Image (tube, rainbow, N blue to C red; front, side, top):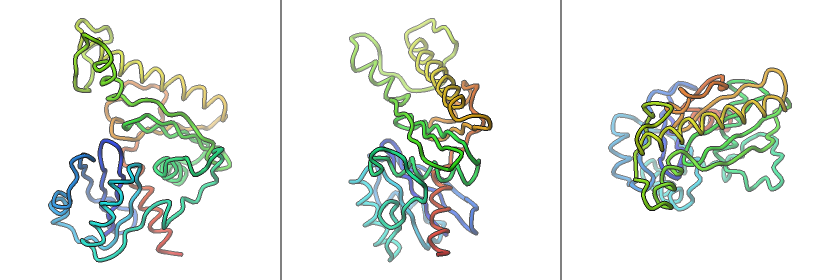
Length: 247
């Protein structure tokens, strides 16, 4: 079995794959609360043979890499270090693109075709745009939904700290629901508008696929998204591992 790990700023997503492309179990551990004991407990029912890691948090990545060497008795694969994502990267500074964004682009190409835009609703919201020639063109980076709510609380005198959840109505009738409506409907409208602009630029047949930890919430409010795949990054990691194994 393969353990695929996507280390984000807020959560670490884990996926266990068995028999090629079959994902049999997923779980999350908050990034700031990760310990080897928590990982061991989550994996106690599974026999893991290999692991592959994609990370945007170097410090945590180094710890998990060491833990997996001790736990598995072998070196896990690290995206960007042991495995290069096989996609033509047209970023002005290619090394500046987060590896998770390239993995999403690669998985999106394989699963949904091109041209394509992948919208990842994580700690940040990222738009990754892939041309009909399967080139990574770049995209957009915005503050995420939770960050936006936290900013309202931290940079104002009277707005409270609230939990991200679905707003009760479009027009909020109290402060909490006004904040939730502004963030959720605001980001969904922004997402629809950017998707429309990107589709106009890339041309007919462009698909928009949503992923990330908040996709289950926000996708209900987006009208221009063609599909959602919460495990897109993990699936991409599995594909890259299988490709490496077969070369």
